[in-house]
View (spheres, rainbow, N blue to C red):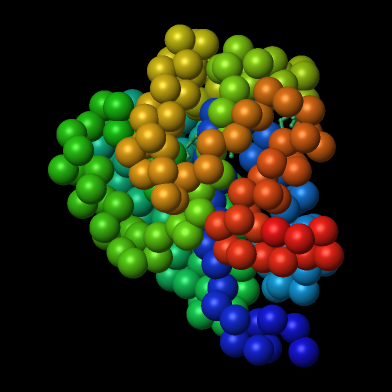
Length: 221
Ligand code: Z5A
């Protein structure tokens, strides 16, 4: 019988960080560790993760919402998140599945929050997330320039999306905003140096996860 069948609680782990910081790479690696340890795991992403939210993703990343201003953009991210939480995340957690999510509420705080007042962001977060808050947030931290280089080398001829087009100083300011969020909530966040090779980052992420949830493996916690 696996752990979900034994009614162990599902855990909610979010990954945050800048463009090209390695979130998708590390989610796959963490999912492998957890599955080997006999957990059921769901990998998902934002914006997206449910059919309606994926439709909103297309609209947002194409840049069609950009001219409407940061409030409208934040409301669209919120609508997508609400659907994702209701249709995908909450049911998975209730069934004992671990949810690993590429970006979540902290991305709205950083990307849209820099142009909005805190009360508005707090309200949108409450509407979309309510009590479904991450148990652990892995912040993959690296200089914006390195992340942008990695993203570019992954897809040198690709069309840049709404956010990829912005300049390095904007990405670096977001990096600092993520670090401030982490400093304000050290119990929830683990800040990982993502400039290291992927296998080193993987071992740091797995260690943070084992510590946070007390997971024992043959190698110990
Ligand atoms: N957004 C927002 O504004 N508000 C919100 O509320 C939310 C999102 C939820 C979504 O973009 C955009 O939406 C995002 C913020 C905004 N835009 N930006 N910027 P997305 O989903 O298309 O992309 P992303 O979230 O920014 O992630 P990404 O660019 O796909 O990168 P990643 O997942 O963090 O990295 P990766 O794909 O794992 O790695 C990138 C490359 O680096 C790849 O070739 C890897 O093989 C390589 N890599 C990975 N790790 C390493 C290490 N350690 N060393 C060397 N190379 C590595």
